Length: 162
Image 1 (tube, one colour):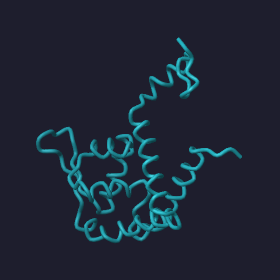
Image 2: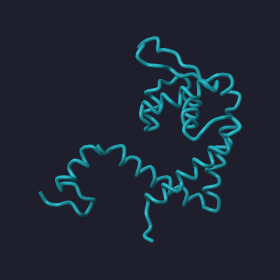
Image 3: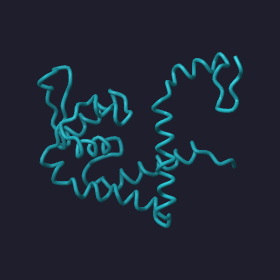
Image 4: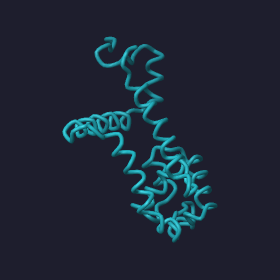
């Protein structure tokens, strides 16, 4: 079978979800919620919009995750004082009490993935993934896919002369 970035990333993503769901089960935190909690550990009081943009998750999914974390007692939601259109999300004492253990369990996944891989190789993998993310961030897929329907867009090296 041909090697494929998509297949490999898909396997890693699915298995990370399994790991997160299992390792954070005792806290009641799911793979759909943990990234919001980690973001708030770094930027407590962020808006839902901030989190959606940073995590590349649509606003509806962000709202569902925040609502779930709120129901579980991990966050509280307040209207932004300067702009009432935005909700600011704050960690509760419960979230802060579990911070170190949640981070430790998340780091265990990274440690597992990189076990037996030297630091230089791991650095190359991170650098490559960052370049891939930058490319995705800089691409307007709606426009690109529309152009491809008109045969203007081809993968690099296969671009049709127009």
